[in-house]
Length: 114
Length: 114
Image (cartoon, rainbow over all chains, first blue to last red; front, side):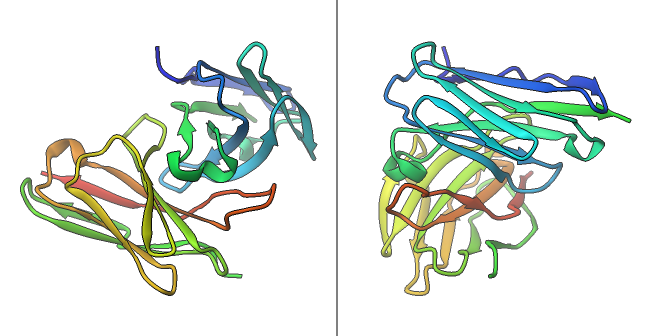
């Protein structure tokens, strides 16, 4: 079992729909959880950063962490074609990765159909 | 504020050769991490440099080595290149400490080993 599991997709939804992206993990020591967006042939761009369990909202994006279930989610409201990208979850025991770095999922390829 | 920059953008090398990749961190960021992202996979942590010292390392062999300079820029060196080293190499910079410690990625260097 990999440390972080993420469905690679592709996930295709119509414009305006609510998108739900998820990751599960096995290492209970993870405390910091991030979502990155990566466009084709570009570096990952940090979208959301959450510490421990709970919800965090930023504009159209909501991140949820359930440490008891080892499950994290990213919701995108009013999805736009420009949201089409690969979404990577990442996590760490330490803030910003520390000496162990960030552990990433494989990424989910999201397609928003106009 | 200048973001993370990497050079070169693309590189083609032959198996057995050596390669050096370069990274300039975001202004004020004193920690640099390197990641390898194979096609269709999430980034994998190679190592991290802080104050010119290796601060942590992932599961990569010693032929992957690095340097950090007083201006916080960094190099990744890979000796005895293998075909499996073909990947996107990402550099991320961060400012340690505090509760909003995040890693910001550069655009990456795409290495092809033939």
